[in-house]
Image (tube, rainbow, N blue to C red; front, side, top):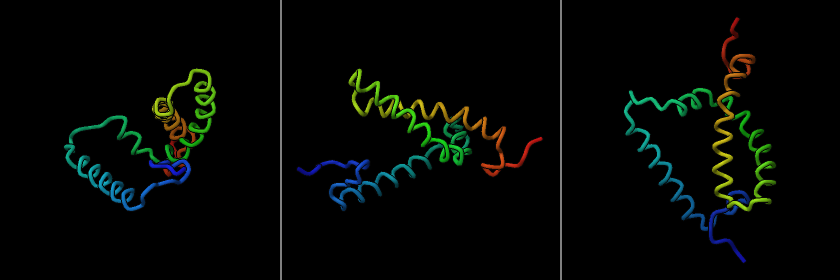
Amino acid sequence: MGLNHVEMSIGHIGNPFTFYVTALMLSFSLIWACRQIPNHFELGVISYLGKNSMVVLTVHYFFISVLSTLFGYINNRIGLGNQIISFIMFVFVTLLMIPSIRLISKYLPSIVGKSERL
C-alpha cells in the first residue's frame, strides 16, 4: 500500500512533479512575503537566530535527538498527535538555542567565526 502524502522522514515525496512545483511556489511565496516586511521592522528573536545561524546549525540536532527520546516516551504514555509533539519540540529547541548561542559566543567565539574577546 503506497503513501498518498509527503513523508520526508522516509524519503517519500509522492508525485515528484507536484512536490517540486509546490516546493518552488512556497519558496517564492516566502521570499516575496519576507521582502514585503519593511526594513525598519525588527523581528527580534528571528533576527537573533539568523545572525547566529552557525550555532543553530551545529547544536540543534543534539537538542532534537535528546528531545525526541524524551517526547517519544511521553507520547507513548499520553498519546498526543505527532504534529503536537513536533510543534512542542520546535518551541523547546528554539528556546534552547538562545542560551546555547550566548554560551558559545561567550566561551567559544572562534568556533563560530567571531573574534576572541578578552
